[in-house]
Image 1 (cartoon, rainbow, N blue to C red):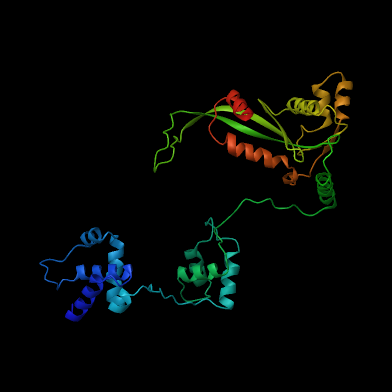
Image 2 (cartoon, rainbow, N blue to C red):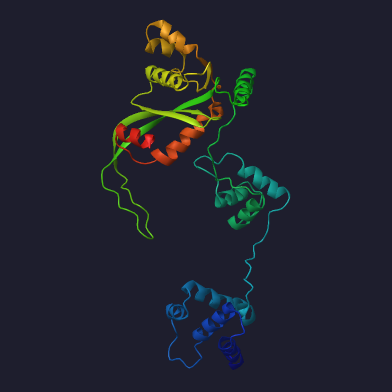
Length: 337
């Protein structure tokens, strides 16, 4: 190394008027200098340990010094990677159309390299780097490898619109204790037993569960909620039969003894029918008297997201039941808590 360059670096490293990054880079270059009177070349790991930086940092400084010179190496401006921006105009539009189309057979999704290769395969360009493809997709906020679960609306129909309007009109009613609006939903839960005792969490280490488990059957959780009043009624059953649903309806009626008529919003399951009341309760007069206290409202199939009880039951499932529980008794006690 020339004496002048070595003197300049020593001056930077020895004065406290320079930025820390510039001082560190100067110290790295000084310690890498073989002409500084050392018998052997210092190792990268020794330099990194002495200056408390990573070995990659040392390697980057050395590479930058060789490629860009001393002045740029000591400056705080990062070196900019230069890529040939081959995508513009028509080619960019073709790339976006390709990334939004179906992926080739044998591929689960589009990737940057796959898109670059296909641009060459289709003879749209002679060569293309995946980094150029990445920049074009980033500019257009497009990530073709992402997929999210979504409720895709069915084909519009008069019946679907009528059911949607009915539910929305019901939700817009003012609060009336004589005519409460109650939404019900249900979810099956698998009962799972731990085979090995989990390892408790510790600083820097999350709680650990063994991947093996034992299935202990299933149970069902009902949720009834009155959105305007903030009331909730939940029930854990062994099955999800017509009789179980009928008992839930009976419990809801008992919860509102002074209500003249209860509007019940629920999904389109084959158990959610007045016939279930007649199968569960005898004589028929008892079932009819119970039925007459309710107004049953069913959002159309694939429109169950309009049932507000789904919000309640999802919150309960994520905050209370999202873990391994091995018995229905424990589910009932946890749900009650």
